[in-house]
Length: 161
Length: 295
Image 1: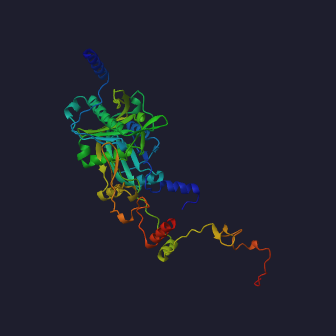
Image 2: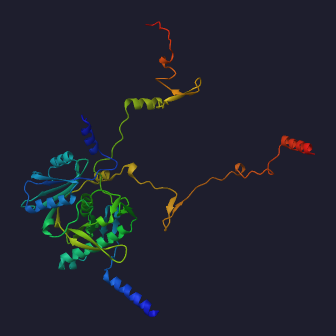
Image 3: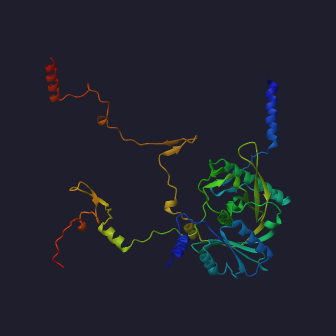
């Protein structure tokens, strides 16, 4: 039994060795804004080690910070869209200035002003009205409406012609 | 006023909006440019491709002395970011990056370039164009110094690309790294290689793909605080309102708090039972008469 457990543990340890760690230690945690894919490292940098070898210093610093950013992004809720795994980004927290000023509301027209003053409101008129005589819904205007002239087969000639 | 539908649409496209368009960048070549500066403009244009316009002819401007022509270009092309490159004896390999707010220059920062390596100097695979870069800033000056702070804001604005709600996890393949150390700013661009780590989160390996620049800050022209504040103002509609009485616990379960008034027990609808019915005088009489009949 004990040997089995040991062998499993060994296998796990070997498996772990194969992969390099994804953990990065930082004195001050990064400020991360996943909405912008932005990370901000405030930890003071060691100038001496930087001067010794600039390239390796910058590369390792970039790797560590990017790893931290990626770790954070991978924690976001994911979704599957057309066979692609997509992470949902929260709205950006780091704000940048607008491009143009905020759009102003269009000034009301003269009629709108007047209507507001008088309290006039638009009323919707329905297309059909109930006719009590015919006991059915008829168009409120036009053909076959109540005032349709063509309905009567005989009409008096008006006097005002 | 527009005369055609097309012109009307074009005007609507440029009009100020609640949710704004992605900022476009304009790359302007100065009257005299060195090879390095031209290459930088081209490389940055390649980074921003899709949201950028590159001017290939010379434009003799002096952004720090006279901004009118800059503002004119910005308005003509509807771009709010610009990068201007020039080269002179006094300021060799000079680059000015800046942004405008409603077609007026908001801030400008002049950077001198030392040690430049272009995209084509690195002979390796590049990222696919149009991917949103990861931006990483490190160094204390970006937190403490006002000019560096503004530069950070400007760089984020310049390189962040469109604001998106979803991102393809496998598509994160470009990282831009800005380090402020030793009085200089180091810009490095990397391709992200995601490797298996044994857990869900992959291990990140980076490969430098260029451009790489060492920058020195020269002249600056930062926006006045009130103007900057004005430009940062958010429309009321875009602000996220706090939803009251709804919370989530550690497990992600939604909890709501409801406020209820005291229930009126007199009007409470209970199960109707015949035996419980209150009898009025009439019904009682009826009952009695029924009984009498049956008897």
